[in-house]
Length: 374
Image 1 (spheres, rainbow, N blue to C red):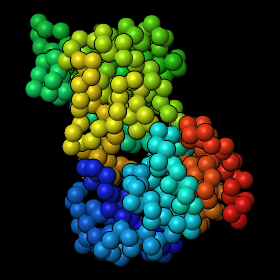
Image 2: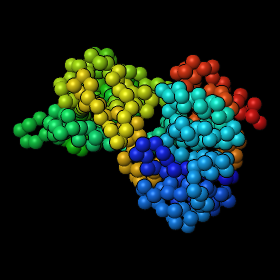
Image 3: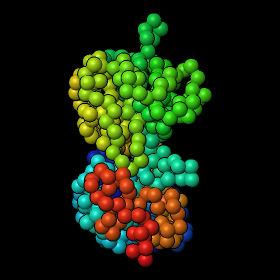
Image 4: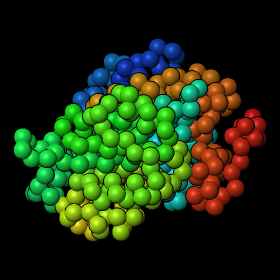
């Protein structure tokens, strides 16, 4: 199969869909890989590295999209990239379609098969292609939050771990999944006073088993959430409903009751955000203040540590890329129900129920769509 890797063009996005090591693996198995020149330059992967791995370097994204049958990216295709897709192509990348109607409509119009990393599953019901970036984002959330608490950033002027004689900052993590656990790990390591809320008792038991008295766990009721948010110096939004828009759990009233200069890091912003006041920001302009609270809502947080993130992502995506290339997209999707869970739209139809519900479309079953295309 002819596999294409365009350079990412989203603001401050330096990750790359395939590293040279992944390209070498594909070429070893008999595939051809087109890589746009400088696609990996921002994280230290030169064109020479890709050439040595067996890739064919091309000068433009237009050539990648014109020739490749399988397009492998990191972030959702931007508007000008979406116009280059055709019905004969498969797109494999993060999409986050539920909060993004324009992208959904453009991908439907393209007719391409669009597989979203974030809804691919595994036999345990986990999200293996979301997990590595969730780990990165969770760790970064506390790092970013600690920085935003500094007075020069508009924060309260609070040191996350405190010092002898001065209390540590109070950190509230909403959600105990991969993002939440990763955030809690870093916050505990920095000496913060950490509370994690979740509605799954098994998740809370696991956190209690791992961290013991270094963490507080709360079952997430309206009352518990409100108290934990209002009392926090730093709130990390780590809520996820796979493929669907994130519920707005943190209200404007809650934020208004927080101390001025407190911080909200909304990791859920890719799926719309978990606070009423959240809106996407970029690494170039990452924060804004609303209701006296510093909001950090960068939609591609792992892009700030792009080399680590790209390598971690490739470790997870490569087996699926190889399956799509070796078997062809339709056969690979037919044979693997976990990869098939990633099919969000295809041939002008919405497949994923969460996306359909968000935008008022009638979803088609993935196997029904595949039967239509066979």
